[in-house]
Image (cartoon, rainbow, N blue to C red; front, side, top):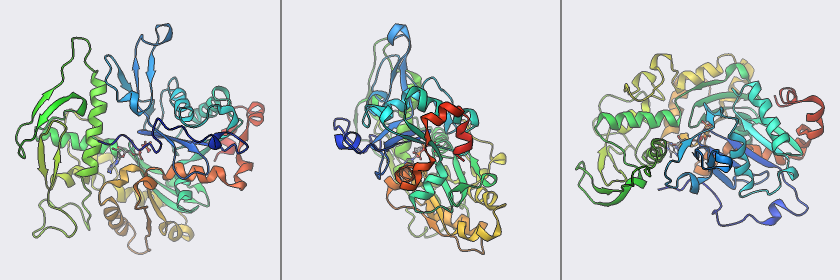
Length: 443
Ligand SMILES: Nc1ncnc2c1ncn2[C@@H]1O[C@H](COP(=O)(O)OP(=O)(O)OP(=O)(O)O)[C@@H](O)[C@H]1O
């Protein structure tokens, strides 16, 4: 069971040299739908990576308000009455009452004690609306009291992580897959595409498939003990029970179920590598490098072999009409959804012919969702179909951490460049011009 991709054990304090002394470095915050990543500019991984989900118990906080729980340890702890929520929706902030507290926790719990000493760079998706951008700068200067601030586009940062200021960024996150053309460090806004077929969609596809097979998911926290059973045989597990009124909430169960689904994505689900869409039956003799079946053991010990199904669960990303459907599990409408190839095609449609080839020469793959086994192979085939003439070159790190943190890393590189200093918005400038300065300075 993965404990989340934190890079520093919670018990280990960061070196004082990192935030104290003469060297005051900027902080970089990359808030995502699934994870919130924070760290010092100039470093190559974020030291503080916390779930964007948080826990709360009504009436347990000061003055009878909400008590909030942030961070891996607290949010996964079993507590009576603790609900799980997420201030992000569609990859942007939807709940401004909680997001600043979550960010403060990410920035201060393991990094800086005093935010007023550190300039802050925050990353954002291209579809972040003006009111959210203004709210972000307000939070930075008024709540956190930072001395300087910058808001950087995710896609531009991901390109920088690969040393590219001109590239096509293919970001497979939790809420969306986004395809963004970037030229000379600026997003070509007309070309930006996004579809709700990221990791959350994949989770729902797996849920649907398991539900159709009659498999229910029992999260780890519900299992007291289990004994091994043969493939496909009913689980023989003893489940925990709680006194009346003490059982964990439904939102907590759902959150913990998502962890099992992520394990399933990591170990069992796979993209059909192509070329071409997933066939209805496995070709005779199989396909090179494709194992016919893989087993997956659920937390209660139930285990099953998955064959073609583990490709079917992911095919909707590439061929929306292949989405699995269920009345009770939300899915986008296949007929209104673009698959990866059509997204890339639409993103490049209006790109000037002079720079098209340069952009296609640097297709950067980022986001933890792209770690789906053989996603890159399939994506490369799909791009080859969309652009049969020009040479398409894909840049995808083989190191998972680099794929997970590319956006953060690009922000870290950007904020530590000497030439970046002129781009920071100072507190004085914010006070003079107001929050709308972010629209003028952070393009
Ligand atoms: N090995 C893997 N294979 C497939 N999916 C994975 C793998 N590891 C993690 N994921 C999925 O990746 C998603 C998280 O991706 P990422 O951390 O890039 O999201 P995020 O940046 O928080 O979200 P967003 O970009 O939508 O704001 C989750 O849905 C998770 O289940």
